[in-house]
Image (cartoon, rainbow over all chains, first blue to last red; front, side, top):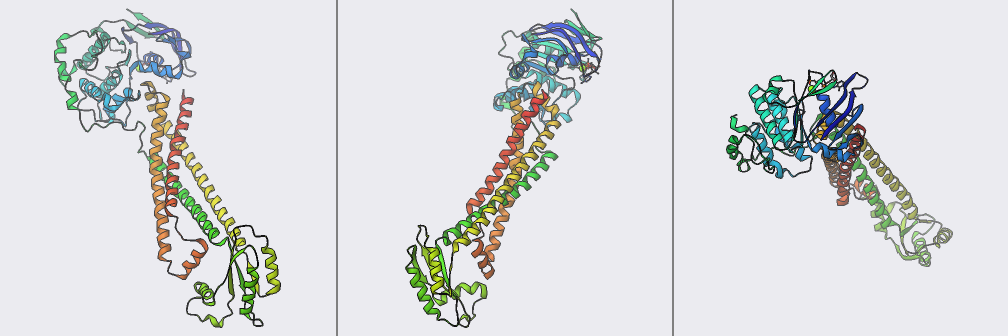
Length: 219
Length: 341
Ligand SMILES: Nc1ncnc2c1ncn2[C@@H]1O[C@H](COP(=O)(O)OP(=O)(O)OP(=O)(O)O)[C@@H](O)[C@H]1O
Ligand SMILES: [Mg+2]
């Protein structure tokens, strides 16, 4: 469902951050994306999200070359993906509930139709008591869980999670990992960007390793 | 937070057939079967995605309020001028008067009778009425004050001619005949006055409409700049919206709604202030109308009030301002989003 061919990317006039990237992500697969800080994990996720255009190479998403996409197809593809940003990117003036409901709201759905579902998911990630709060008063771990809930609410086919356990205690990190595994068994392809070795040892899965701008796969 | 709170909710992924691992926890799934009955009533929802109540937003409301106020007053003034000129035209256009000036060497009553006789002979004059002395004296009261004994004064006498609706090309000849036969009489053609007053009124109307147009353009520009500012300030939010699957149409609608809200607030406040001012002026004018000055004003400008249609125009102006705010912000956002991608 995702395929990169000789993809390279540089920011502006800077050095090439990613070089000759080749890999693919199969439907219903589970993989880690790892590498040292600054290796380009977030950049790679932004490429998959079509928030960045590659400076060279080809990116295929859901069987189509993204450089030739219509705006409406691009929106459709994004609706099939759920993303947990490393810096959460919750909207500050909306409550947790409204933030999590956002992917459904932008589809033009009636609020009454998804309210129960959103509340249910919020309770599930342990934010049932905090759903009226705005992000600025949440702890890092609470924001992280809100960001994860927002990524899950639309039941994406592809989940991209950038450091989803970076701000939580190891116990909660383990439970979140189990949640992602459960998602995979339910049919979602999962990509977890992390440099937490302990986390990756909990559940063995293929690792896409970024180093010096190159990517290799550790099966 | 208990561990059991982390088991998968039965509701959420129920449609997926192959639910997987960890059967031990699924028995506790019923914990999540109840939320429907326990939904908080005070859930804050459907807040605008673009914040409305910002400093820049309030500043824009004030600007729009001031512009609407000015536009509404101009529109009201133009409407008043239009109505006044209509009144003059209706009352005066098919009337003429003959003025017979007193002359110590002549008999004014004889001159009056002769002028009436001449006027009756003119085909385009439908009706001739010599105004009795006391009536013409009363006409002067507002200007000279009551109780003055006008018998002593050489007051001109008036003959009112009501014209046929048809064209009157014999009136010039009549004017000349009159001057020859009765040198102390002159024919006043009100229509010249009406034409002058209409020109003046039309100028006021055109100026008023022009001011309204300028103000609307200014409002549109203010909204365009404010929208660009808001877009630049919400760049991050806009990107998040895109990444969670919002299309340009959705985002444009959010901004448009925000600016319609601001436009309605500003337009409402400005329109309300204009209505208050107009009502106040009307009230002052009527409180003042017992005085002779008011009679003079009334004689020249008509009643100082714009009536329901005037209030309608004010509300219309406010609504147009709000609509422009929505439209301009929409176009600006579309433009900006296209430039962004
Ligand atoms: N917007 C940008 N403009 C210029 N350079 C950037 C930009 N974003 C990232 N970079 C650079 O690209 C490189 C890769 O950054 P990226 O954020 O992808 O790393 P990462 O693997 O996610 O790191 P971390 O583990 O710390 O999150 C870094 O050297 C970074 O400085
Ligand atoms: Mg990163």
